[in-house]
Image (cartoon, rainbow, N blue to C red; front, side):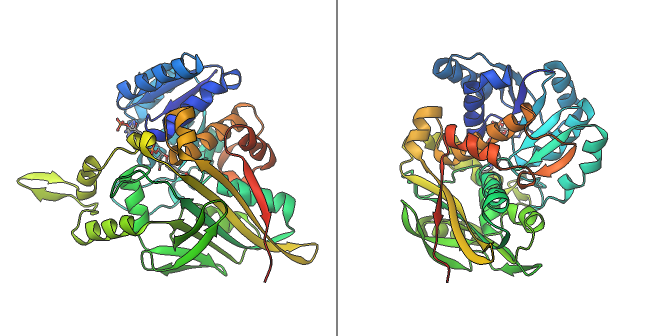
Length: 398
Ligand code: NDP
């Protein structure tokens, strides 16, 4: 077995594939496959120009397990990196166990007909991966992904006990449209329009969509309205960070985004059930996705920064301690380097790094794992040199 097979050719894939090509000494050989092969070919051409590396391309329907197995056996890679959509997680995982290769993804499985965002189905494949003698690394994007690595790093190096975690995700980028989403619109709108949820004292507490707002001061970005959302890493971190009392997730949204989303929701455009329209069955959110700008097209027009990080509080040597670990990314710099904006960049770079951890055997195991279950330091070192440098601020404790 040699090289990697990357599945999906959207914004995140563009960044992950460019970054893998920049690390060709590690990955040896890259094959990029997706439903629309012309998108793979565009990325391949761009990589040849930018990095001078040749990659192979292929066409694949990743909903089809036998087809996937055939492709994996033909390419014969060491690892499959899944940067298609969360709907394809289970089929690609099943194909990986049948073909005996490791698996990496950036988002948890989502059933096309239910907005659930939970790890149950993927964690349920642990035995299957153990039996096949391979491993799955789940959620190697930014959030989930780097946020889990930040928490693991804090647990392994900065604290004796962690009690509180707030994940703060700010995108202060401006793309100039009245309304657009920075990654796949369907997944983004499902996530934001769902009820909020956080974990406290062993229980989940549910909120109405966008019910809890805080105005948070993001270092080097400024004060931004931030809303409590449910986000999938809360499920794994609440299990894997021992002694935790509360974990929450906040994301920034501008007033225009929220006004548009509420309006679309009120008229039924976010619906995930099919409706009949002039004798044709359509799913409202899929039709909306067709109308909205393709996230991949936002790259050249987005300016500003992202700041994503974790505020972590706990005890060190019996004394209360609070730190803020974060990364800042500039949309235009990301675009110059990879042809994609910062939301794709902050996901694609960690997707490459997670894959590198497995490829080099730095993280090695059998079964299904979340990212915070491994030693964080080698991943943190890679972030520093691969385009996502981080900082740690000591915050006052009240
Ligand atoms: P895009 O919609 O831009 O790209 C998705 C790609 O997957 C497209 O190329 C699409 O092909 C391909 N695809 C979809 N269905 C299939 C299929 N059945 N078979 C083969 N290929 C398929 O999405 P993004 O790049 O924005 O996001 C990619 C992933 O990253 C998603 O899972 C998303 O949830 C995740 N993500 C994670 C984040 C994190 O921080 N952890 C943040 C942002 C995103 P086609 O072009 O033909 O439609």
